[in-house]
Image (cartoon, rainbow, N blue to C red; front, side, top):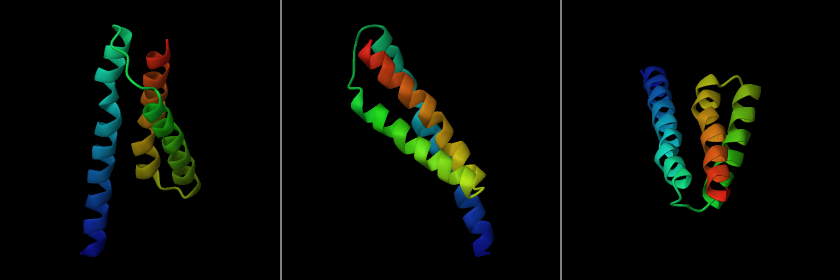
Length: 84
């Protein structure tokens, strides 16, 4: 019973994590049209996600690695668009 709960919890956490990083899209779009935001938070998020992806790959924890992968891309892109 607990194993099934943990598995479902993992999938729910993966989906919410993906949603959190995809939510950078409006910030990126605003940056591109000239309404610049801060670059620090998305940069730190990208570093954090990179560490979690490496950890997830090493531990073969694929939901963890997959959930944090978009954070690297969207975090770095949000940081870049805030700086240009």
